[in-house]
Image (cartoon, rainbow, N blue to C red; front, side, top):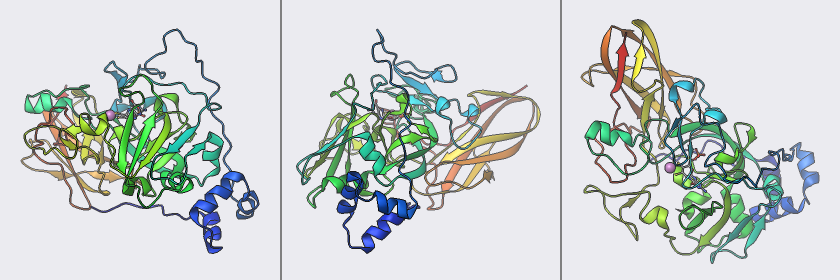
Length: 414
Ligand SMILES: Nc1nc2c(c(=O)[nH]1)N[C@H]1C(S)=C(S)[C@@H](COP(=O)(O)O)O[C@H]1N2
Ligand SMILES: [Mo]
């Protein structure tokens, strides 16, 4: 699998600092203390100013599960708002149309009172960071899609006749956004992560979720990857409350559950960390999957390659030549080709890929179709530049994760 690192650490201030023999940790510590403001100014770099939301109302009698307007979504209840792909005409999904998945409810945090604690046995010392501290660290902006592990789950039922447990997501438990924040690696460097560190656990501040704070661990290699970010802005705006205000993780290519919202604590450990989200949740349980470590199945980390048409399911369109749009994405590498078939896969034709794929974002595509009256099925199938493609069959797993067979999209032409 090709590791995609398209934005290396090109921060000019850091280049200057490292030229002078400063360690990354020392550099970050100086930045925090404000001691290098002069160097920053000399480099022409601006310290981003916090322009957050106004102080949230914390005293609602019954706080909502989700703050945003649910009207444009397919509402699955239980804080599951599925995006309607047909409303996403641009590559970037606007914040108002970006899907939401909470395991309990959205949290309203006061940025003035919020802080991030970093601790664990594989650190030199525990660290407490305020939002201002985070804003003083080197900033990165990166596009990445974010997709729930259970996106397409309903297809196990519709296409294999076996329904899996969990929210019956169609195709919209996904969105593509531009995120701004800091590298998790920088926060770990600041805390003095030791050689002995093997696992990094991220814990959210949603107290009602199982275990008190939704949490997910990742191996140190993934935590240190320069594209694993802690972000405070989404599509140029302060991170909305539903998406983890004031700080969330973005772990490109990994399933949504690893991208912890309302981040409050990071535990850096010299031992693997097992919590509900890598033992009983987010594991593949079924005849074709092997349990690993303390988990009941194989642990779901990376997403899978998929494609979908930006149409309602089922869709109704008028007869005549029609342009059909869609999205394709792979956690492994850029999309190389997408093909479509209107004869259930007997033959395939290439689509047109639109524009450049940005960072870890999805690819947009379109093709022209001669719509004749009647009922039709159109399939799409994506392949990435490493040769990964959508399989004809995904073995069933109880919780319905990672379904990525080509979807036979029902279309009525009338
Ligand atoms: N703290 C916290 N983080 C969380 C969750 C949660 O319930 N609590 N849900 C996870 C899941 S399962 C998904 S799919 C993504 C959804 O991100 P979004 O709501 O910003 O689209 O957030 C993840 N991060
Ligand atoms: Mo999810």
